[in-house]
Every structure is written in structure tokens, then in C-alpha cells.
Length: 592
Image (cartoon, rainbow, N blue to C red):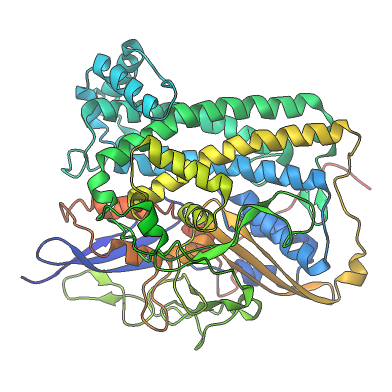
């Protein structure tokens, strides 16, 4: 029987534009896959010739979701170039802004981008509210807590709301789903729990955004981080502002522990047969004998590390998330990250170039070669040639996955006490083998584990900030001589974003940016094949996946969503012909 070609374009419920082409055999099993971004990236070119102190304000426009992360990484690249160490208050404020971004991003991802890959909304209409309340108690109990929403009346009210939408034909965001697909595995009651928490998460994520704005000035696109520190002096001096942050964090943590974690346990248990193809024990995994389940993919992971825990310097501090590389699922050995081993290849990307380049020497010269139009009227990717606007990053001439799963895997492999505790507790409470992590479900679970950890440690940071300012330390900025340090220098901001390893590299000549490159998490994960024909993380994760219905490729969507794609980060739209797109005049409302 001839192989079939599946095109999913666009992948929805993500940031940006992504196309997946998959080839399935006679058993509907994916035997080949291709990931393609259909937008052009041009931010690096826009930044050339700019004042490096302004780079962060422009670089944060790389994305409308993880704005603050690009902002901070860009600032840190310049601080590295200028050899600046920021004060303690600035470190804590940046950690709190980034931490709020993490829990906000992870919550929105699970409920509003990914949950509908597990939850059949229409099935929830046939649920028994009384049984739903019992089911909610069950999964909250697994998590060691009480349910966030409890009692039959509460679930009945939510069910009635959704039923009203269906009756009126106003499904809105729930419209055009693959409802009824046989690869949905939750019971009607479990689906009602998922829908109820989906709706409540819309309110909770608003509070999480407020947390970012308290010290960042606004959300998205915070304004308070500058080269040398932060500017929110009045906010950290005001106990009421810190108390508000803490109050919002407490409510957010409650939802994380009483709704988010129980829901991930529920999904992980019901989809356990997809989560692992082995019963490997933790000890076996530590010896490199792990086998990934559906969506496991590359099984090689890298993290730059992030969230400084002391003030010894950016690349000297102890980190909440340690850096490292794990190859082939072997947790018995961790390789240290060497920045000189990072490169980007464009063999299968729509750019000019004939060899992998380090980001300091990176180029962004577009070379679009189009699609292959067939007689059947369909346009396919030219997979033997160039087929994506995303470059192909390689580390030490190997392909790796980045993200929350990478951070948890490296943390456990390195023996980090805090990360190992949270991962072990999660698996123990859910009676799950460690091998479950190496899968689509595991990638989603790792994000939930990280969210709980982050919410807990942020409480320590906000208390530390309050205590430090109360002691009289109000320093938020380190002075520096720009004319002296900005002649000819270069720096890197290598840390993490919610979706994984993020690096900004800048070369400064005569006080201006000579070259700027950003290699983002979705560049690592969503990249096409490299010069050796090796698959990117998205592509590798789809191989071996069984598709129940090729007309409703739910399994492809589920696995790709587990990475939380942000293609807007990986690529950006500019007019390559230099056409003037618009003219804007700003009236400041004042005269000098």
C-alpha cells in the first residue's frame, strides 16, 4: 500500500506560523516528518547600527508572549560585553519578573493551547456532575491536596454554560475541534473537570500577568530592566507593592497545586500507554537504559541554566536550573555546556550560507526557494532542498532538545537536590515510572513539575527582596562608563526562556551594534534537518506515532503542542525589499 502524505498547515493554538508535513505507512504510523516555518526572521538586521543599551527594547519585540525573557537576555548580553555585575535587588527583581512569566506561560500553555489535545469538550456535556465532583477529589488526592473546584453544583453550572454555547452554535474557541476522535481517552467526567479548569485558568492567568507588571511596569513588554540593573526603585521600597505580589503569587500557587497538577496526573494516567514503551526503572535510566514513549524524539537534552541564586556574577553564580547536556537519554553522564560549540546551519533553511556558523559570526541573508507544486493542485515542501525559515542549531555537531523537560532531565542527572525532589515526588505521587518523562506526556508533565517548583521558590525570593530592602539596601543599578566599555567588545546572554535555552549574542564596535544574533528555544526544537540530514526535535518526536484518523491528525497536534511552539520567536516578518511599510509621528505632549 502506498504511503500517504499529511499536511497540517497551519498548526493552531501556537504563537506564529508552523506547517508540519508527515508521511504515514499502511498502518497509519508516521515514518517521516518535516517541520517548516512560513515566516521570515529579520530582527537581527534591524538591530545592526543601534546603541547596544537600546537593544533590549527592540529584541523583546521578537515575541508577544515571552517578551520579558528576550528583553532580559538582550540586556544580559550587553552586560556581559561591558563586564557589569548587577546589585542584589536587581537580581531578585529580575528573578521575580521571569518567574511570574514562567508560571503564566506554563499555565496558559497547558490549558489554553494544549489541554484540548487531551480534553474532549463535547464529551463533557454527558458527564454526571456528582461523579465529576468525586473524580476531582480523586485526582486532587493524588496530588496531596483538595480540589480547586469542588461540589456537584459548581460542575453543573459550568456544564450548563457550555451546553448553552453548544445549543446556540457559539462554541467559539471550542469550535472545529476533533471532538469524538477515538484517541481522546478521558471519561466524560474527567473532560468536565478539564473544561472547568480551562475556564477558571482564564482568570488566574490575568493575576499572573499582574505579577509581572508590578516590577516590570507593564505586561507584555516590561520596561524596568536596563543595562546595569532595574529601574523599579519605588516599587521595591513600597511594602504594599511587595505584599500585592505575594498575595497574587499565593492564589496562583493554589491553582497550580489544586488544579494544574491534578489535571496533569489525570491526563498522564489516562494516556499512560502512550507515555512509555518500557518499564525502565529510575536506576536503569541512570545507566542509560531509558526508552522513550510516543513523542520521545531525540532523547538528547540541553539547558544553559538560569535564575541566579547569588551575586558572584552572571556566569559564576549558583543557578536554580543548572546547565548541562544529556545525550541519548543517558542520565548517568552530564556534559558541561561550551558556548563555543554552538552553531547554526542553513542547509535546509531559506538563507544563504554553506557552513554552520557560531552566533557571533552569524548571518541572516534570506534565500527563499518556494514550494513544490504538484499536479494534484497541492504545494509540498521541497524537503530535499530548503524548506523552512528556521535555521538548524547544532551543539557540538549534534541535535538536541531544549525546554522544561531538558531542565528537569539535566537537573536530575546532575543530582540537583531541589529538582530531583520535585521530579521524584511527582512520579511517586502518580505512581509513574521515570521513563514516562521521555514522551509527549512526559514533556507536558515536566512543565507542570517546573511550574510547582517555580511558584514555591518565588515565595522565597519575594521574602528575600522584602528583607533586603527593609535592611536599608535600596541599590538597583551599577554605574558604568559607556564611552570606555563600548568601543570594541562582544557579549552573550545565555540563559533560559519558558520554552528552553535562549541565547542573544552581540558584537559592539565603536559604540554601535555590529552584529546581533538570537538563537531561541523554538529555533532549537522546530528546526528542519541539518547538513547531515539529521532531524530536528519536532520532526524526530513524530516518528513512530500512530495516527488514528489521517483526516483528524490529533496525535500530530498533541505532540507538537507538547513543545509549546513559539514560531514568532524563531522567525519575524520584515520587508526584505526595503519598502516603507508605514510612517509614525509621536506627539510627546510636552515642549523643551
